[in-house]
Image (cartoon, rainbow, N blue to C red; front, side, top):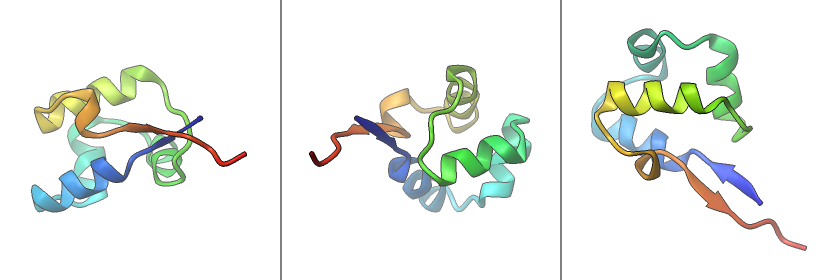
Length: 69
């Protein structure tokens, strides 16, 4: 199983925000943003900061996707 942050990127578009705007609003590192961009696992604390900044729930920014076997 893997994670996808497509919902996050769509939400940023809907809120007319750039990735850099999100990074500054949350205080997360550029490394964490890069991991999000590659759909890699990030610390839950980062996801909570993003949810707080965007005033949304976790399921609004991330989804679990199955991997093909």
